Image 1 (cartoon, one colour):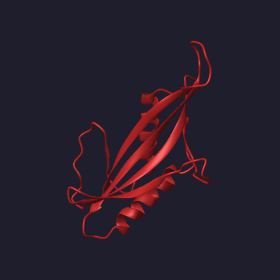
Image 2 (cartoon, one colour):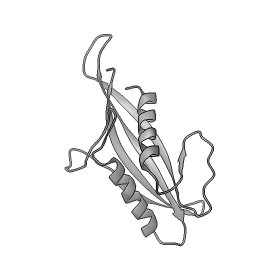
Image 3 (cartoon, rainbow, N blue to C red):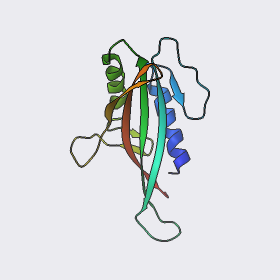
Length: 138
């Protein structure tokens, strides 16, 4: 899959399945809601690895989906952690078209994870990282 195809597949999946908050996407106009709860979804296709040689060689591409969860400061971090857990569950072990997210069941397959990123512009932020891989050149 090309980086563009990966981005489109993941964004379509997220748009279809995420209903908890409004979503901002890269390079699209967005106004955060007044209640302060929203997420930003960024798909970052990364390095491609060739597993064959020749003009029609195939391999795989790794990458990560980063979802930043924003909640109002002062309401407690539990709201952000709960939304982040929903994001993790949405991607954990899922096949999104030809984009594959690891279940994270053991140390050899990193699954979704969340960190508390502190306060940004008056909002509490949690960042969810969801590693993936996709076939490249097929």
